[in-house]
Length: 252
Image 1 (cartoon, rainbow, N blue to C red):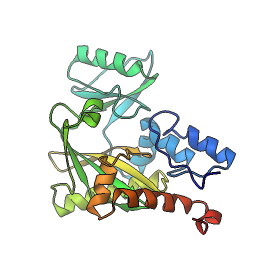
Image 2: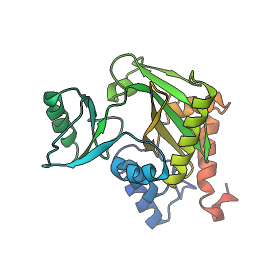
Image 3: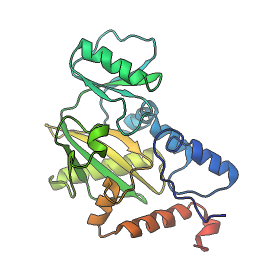
Image 4: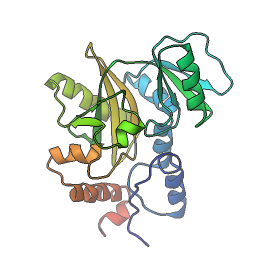
């Protein structure tokens, strides 16, 4: 009987479209994007097949299925589960031994993994709210890369918003974020992650269809720079999500 369900789920079932598809079948309204775009975005393999042909650069790599072997691996490389979230199971391998360990780790979570080139650079994220890119935020882990521990352990990373970058780079990242958002047919809101290498070249890493929504998460930090408070951000997400259901919009 609720007006709308506020989606605060992450990872499998919550972010891969299964809950959204169930709600669609039951006629339950919800915040965020639909089941199909959720499913495609959750699969890094499928997302790459959509984004790269649209001219959005992503790290080069291959998809491996359990039991398959890869003949040549340029080190360092990144090994990650295809449909994981929060950087769970992600490793950087610098040699054959680390690569085998990284594969074992990634395959312990699912049967499909990605092996990608390692991009040495700065990490950024850009939230898109109702089709509009918010200010760019930079994430700087104090140690290692932005893995699960650095994402969720307080004080493990420095987050700067707006990011300390020139206007050209800022525009490049914002434009790429909105292009990825549109290419994946996302709705309401999302967050797109990027790497910027030392030559100034940007790589899109992934699209998060249900980005973190604690008051200190990346999206609320970006919204705050635009003058949008956390309560107002939640209200805004509800408002634009209800707009997907025209017959309900006037009742809100």
